[in-house]
Length: 459
Image (cartoon, rainbow, N blue to C red; front, side, top):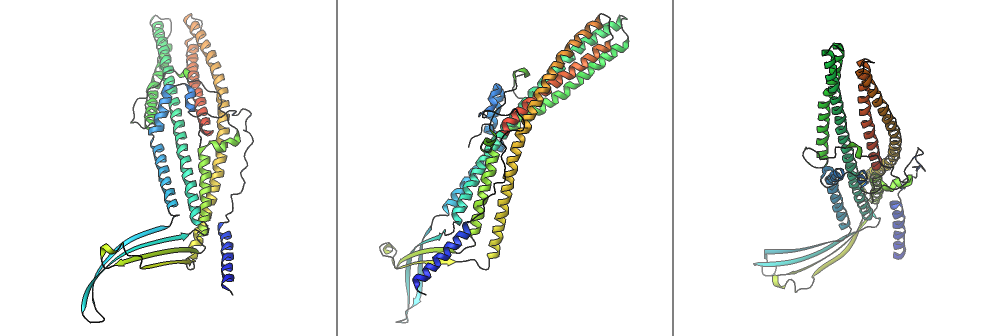
């Protein structure tokens, strides 16, 4: 066989191996995207960035912004981005040839082959060596692609951490203000029951009523009073949790004490297909899938022969200051082709590991996407139901307030027993707390919807 024919055969074989090495099965398009939300009422406009400002509370805005600066989880996520950025630079640096330089000095004593007498000599040597592993099958370029995708995934993870912390701070603040409102309602109820207790005591002392009504009034007063320490403890716990979220030691949280100023907002809106680009955790899972595909391609390329090119040159002199003036005395240029033989099983196992990792990334991506659409549908339904519940509870509160007013007048005028007023007081107190809780649930559901829709996050 002629040399030209041998060279052509080698090129054809290399092309076939390259095709086998770089062909990676793409992730199947098995994830259907819903065309609309499950309920008729759904999002219709994009979620704005800094969505928490829509509630119009300066203290809430300050807490969220402080958390975005100081929260440890966010700082850890940002530091991890720096780590992956450095890893990308390392992967890119491996794609360049290596160039090593060195200097050696030798002082030796030898015996002359001519005279048979010993003599001493000095040798100064300079060395320059270049080495380059040719990326025939795209192993290094695939590794760089994997590093780029991993960096993008970590950047999305940092954004996801910011979104989660912002939603947690907003939810914690709403819960704290609702606890303040429950405490205010309980203290107002306690004051009302104090007046009822004083009236029952005077009527008993004047012989107008029995001691039973006085004791019942005192029992209801103590019941309301016993709720205050528990609420105060819950408020302290919530303040401590918020302090840690924003990166502070546990302390009192500045806030508005008027729960009415926190009005539920109109629904944010986004088309279902846009959710794939708006949620950072979906983008993170997508980039991790791309990184797994690139890693699989790099693992497959390691099964194929590698081509290594080397070049070296040395110059030497017996006098140090003449070393740089002398030309290269020795040089060499060469190349080598290495193919894995005995360790092929280990390399094949690494390909299987990469394939399994890619499949895990694919299933994780599908899980994240489906969970995202499920969360949005859950929040939409929760908002609708809590709105309906809040409307009905507010109507009930108006009716019960009127019933208490009538029962109190009838009791004071001697037309009814104290049991009627007592029952109306209990119902009103329970209804007022239920109104506060239902409104807080509605606000929390809206905050979670902002989070589920990506919260105005942009790549």
